[in-house]
Image (cartoon, rainbow, N blue to C red):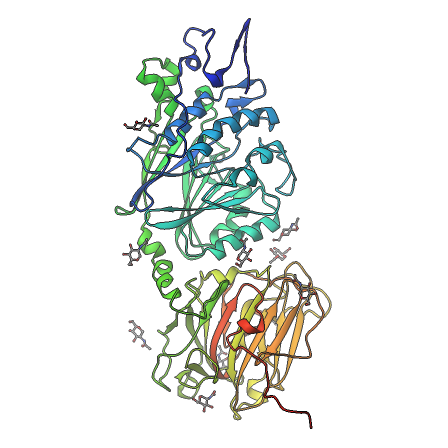
Length: 622
Ligand SMILES: *[C@@H]1O[C@H](CO)[C@@H](O)[C@H](O)[C@H]1NC(C)=O
Ligand SMILES: *[C@@H]1O[C@H](CO)[C@@H](O)[C@H](O)[C@H]1NC(C)=O
Ligand SMILES: *[C@@H]1O[C@H](CO)[C@@H](O)[C@H](O)[C@H]1NC(C)=O
Ligand SMILES: *[C@@H]1O[C@H](CO)[C@@H](O)[C@H](O)[C@H]1NC(C)=O
Ligand SMILES: *[C@@H]1O[C@H](CO)[C@@H](O)[C@H](O)[C@H]1NC(C)=O
Ligand SMILES: *[C@@H]1O[C@H](CO)[C@@H](O)[C@H](O)[C@H]1NC(C)=O
Ligand SMILES: *[C@@H]1O[C@H](CO)[C@@H](O)[C@H](O)[C@H]1NC(C)=O
Ligand SMILES: *[C@@H]1O[C@H](CO)[C@@H](O)[C@H](O)[C@H]1NC(C)=O
Ligand SMILES: *[C@@H]1O[C@H](CO)[C@@H](O)[C@H](O)[C@H]1NC(C)=O
Ligand SMILES: *[C@@H]1O[C@H](CO)[C@@H](O)[C@H](O)[C@H]1NC(C)=O
């Protein structure tokens, strides 16, 4: 509860008690209906729905200048259960809730938000520069803002799915238009580990269309709307690499504006500034409606103050208020088109497939298998390999100096315990370099994966006795484009020209897992034993966030290092199946066969491997 001070009069505005009213004070002209409890229930299957955006409300909460009523009326609009005009599914605040980051400011703001809590409205919060010490990043620790709007507040929220460790970044998943949508609410300044967190959230939910909200991103300061310096950082470290992000929303700057950029997948990302704090009554609790229409593939945007509309209804809006009732400039009222089906259809269609495949266990990022083709038919450059995990990590064909003798074939051959009854017959050679391989498509989410919480890479492989050390040594089953040098790894034993991750065969056909972990300046190697010819093998490489171990046919090998190796370095480039890079170019192509390959973003126990056990027959020792 707060007290408004007027000479000689005390007014408790939250109760609407009005002992005295200044003539023409728009504030005193307002009546608020009580918050309806738990009645908010949008139609999550309707193809028409509305996202509400509320920018910088800081001048409503400024030390002893506290005026929550415009915000309360905006919330009344959002929660108006009987109002069939809108199908409001979510509300996002864009930060700068209050002006000075003071506990007493949030006490009142928090009370206003209780209206949303009581009605059960789904909403997200993030900190702007006024909500916290603007010189700090999101490792700043607790603040009055976080006390009021941190994870505690969302304990009963149906859409809140989690925050990063410090609590300043969060994400929500809401259902609308018959599908799920992801919304990220990111802090004023993200630390590196928060970028890792946000990248992981997006990768974990790569099939969901995503909206990114943060306080500062695009700015009008150069005379046209462009990414600010910090906005560029967010673009480079996060936005451009996740094709699922189609819209970003930020406040902070004014006037309102909009721009768009093309992401790494070649798709459009729209970026809007929304902020009215500079206008009469601190923006008068202005909100933006994003009215999605999935049938028309449009989003209709409009901007208005529900509070002023309320005053107008009673003929009580003053002349300055009237100017702010609805904003109709090109930057505040417009329609954008997004072909949702086209943009998100891949995730949509593969999702159905996903449940059919029992090998797609929780955490599976990619699962490739090669069955379903006529034995020994050539693979053509038009062939792609679908990622059965449903994450869109599909493989496309690549070839170097192919010829009849060096073309890849589909094969029926496979390991006896392999789920997919098929394989790829690779015929690469080193001198001169010839052969074919596959690599993940350019925008595949797995290209960005960092595996901070561990991983399991599994593959089946076979080396025929025609394999020769001269021609086939140091070829890879799986590897990641990008070299240790490009990743700025300079420590002891680093070969700057080698790939940041590879699972290869040495000149003695020993398996070698060579990987550069995150945030460390060295590489790490696990060695298997010499692979016997003409036999199918299963290899698994398992990392639990700390240690990496290799297993052959489910049996742990001896040459596993005791080395702290968290995650995998990425330069956001594709993975290759059967290709190996050295010093920036393709250098070797696999010879032999590769069967099912699965990548999971957590350590698996042996029982969870595609091949279940290392147990031998029960016999007595000789
Ligand atoms: C909604 O409409 C019903 C029936 O018209 C009415 O009884 C109820 O009070 C309304 N609720 C609100 C919050 O306006
Ligand atoms: C964050 O990561 C960048 C590289 O992406 C690095 O240059 C910078 O030093 C890191 N900052 C911190 C605080 O670790
Ligand atoms: C991503 O998914 C993995 C596996 O379910 C989980 O352990 C991890 O915490 C998730 N990451 C985030 C940031 O939610
Ligand atoms: C899923 O894909 C189908 C076929 O392409 C399309 O008709 C449908 O609208 C899509 N659904 C969603 C929610 O995108
Ligand atoms: C690949 O597809 C293109 C276009 O459909 C076709 O012209 C070409 O012949 C195909 N190539 C092969 C090797 O099948
Ligand atoms: C293709 O083979 C020729 C020799 O036949 C070799 O000079 C060339 O480097 C090879 N191409 C690539 C990309 O390695
Ligand atoms: C490596 O260092 C260079 C020069 O400092 C820098 O431009 C580049 O971004 C760094 N790359 C990575 C992946 O950290
Ligand atoms: C990983 O495994 C090692 C060996 O069992 C264990 O010491 C370590 O604590 C594990 N790390 C994690 C993060 O579970
Ligand atoms: C790596 O490639 C560069 C040209 O891209 C070349 O100058 C350099 O000599 C190569 N290094 C090795 C070790 O082959
Ligand atoms: C290709 O597969 C066949 C079995 O289907 C095998 O006999 C042959 O050795 C394989 N060749 C290579 C290069 O793996």
